[in-house]
Amino acid sequence: MKAVILAAGEGQRLRPLTLTRPKHMIQVAGKPLLEHLLEVLKKAGFTDILMIVNYKAERITEYFGDGEKLGLKIKYVFQKEIRGTANAFGTAENKVEGDFLAVYGDLLISPDVIKAALKLHCNENPAVTMTVLHVERPEQYGVLETRGARVVKIMEKPSAKVAAGKPINAGIYVFSQEIFEAIKQTKDSSRGEQEITDSIQMLIKSGKKVVAAEISSGDWRDVGRPWDLLEANARMLMKTKPETLGEVEENAHLEGSVFVAEHARIRSGAYIEGPAYVGEGSDIGPNCYIKPYTSIGRNVRVGNACEIKNCIIMDRSHIAHLSYVGDSIIGEDCNLGAGTITANLRLDYKPVKMIVRDTVIDTGKEKLGVIMGDNVKTGVGTLLMPGVKVGCNSWIGPNVNVSRDVPSDTILLVEQSLSQRSR
Image 1 (cartoon, rainbow, N blue to C red):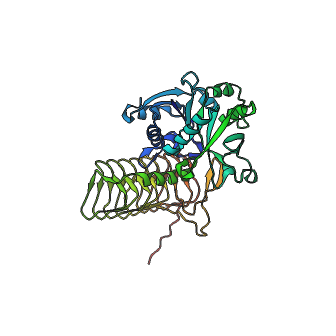
Image 2: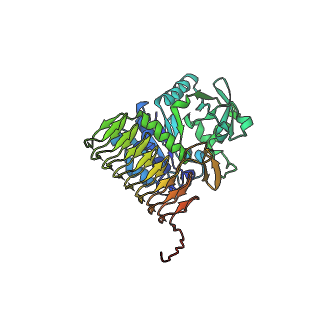
Image 3: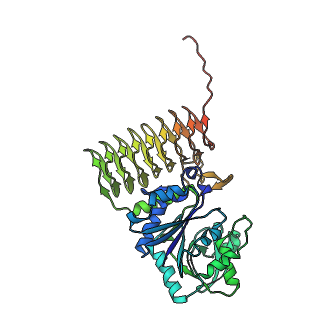
């Protein structure tokens, strides 16, 4: 059986991180989301992969190639126009034979999820096997009405009252060839897109058998919003085996599960508390504190008297000295000036809010710092308030207190009035 991965979307809710990469290529625990998924597929017995791509497709194709390095056979199909999940999966017609597995490329799952779907599909022989689970706020997802294992109705983001107690669609499917005829008949939704759930609903209405395999929430993580990345990073770090391949100087201390890649250097006085990941060629210390659930990319510099906690620091960024970065994501090629502080806790202890696609969202997180795009520079003494986003290629001058989002390609300076007089 072939596995089809949908990796074509832009990931607009993850701006500014996705201005320069597909969301599937954002790294957590030292690897792109998509690589974690491919490793799971391989463990579940899949080696023949078809990947549907569009947005910044070259970032995916150049990184994975034909899949040989991962022990896989990967082929690509280009979705000419992003018109929804049904349209995307429809591009796989004539490229897969018989039944096939279909997975959204921004999911972190375990092999048990795939095995559960395949087992039910083999036992029931339906037109479609879906996967479902129960979450705290089902109204944020598509929910299903079921009778036993059989799906009788799919509802996309209903009210909280309607969704209460119902399982959500987990985004892992096993399709028969019947799905392609349903896709051809699928009309645009209110969002102007062709939704795969509408295609499945058409099969249900026509009397076709659609079933759902229930999975554990501990085996599934959806990554749709910036703070989801931090949770995904923490989850994958807990699964990363500790290993020291780089150099650890005398009087540096690694506590718990810490992975140090080749050519990385941990200088004297550095204290790294795992689970944590330090990428190839990175230079850490002296005398800094890396707290749990921090993933540091390749060729990153973390200098003297810095503290980093529960963060993703991407490749080639510099946090040179006297800075605090907490519960934050820092893009590639950023340079934080001395004394840059990311505030991550409101004074009233209420959940941090963040603007996502022009809407203020309650993140539900008591602690959340900055989401920073690529190639950002901050001056000395920069203060970044909780939940702020900074766009790519922006410069923030010294002593600026950033309390609202900063667009890409922006220079942000503070106007200062000085008074000089004789003593």
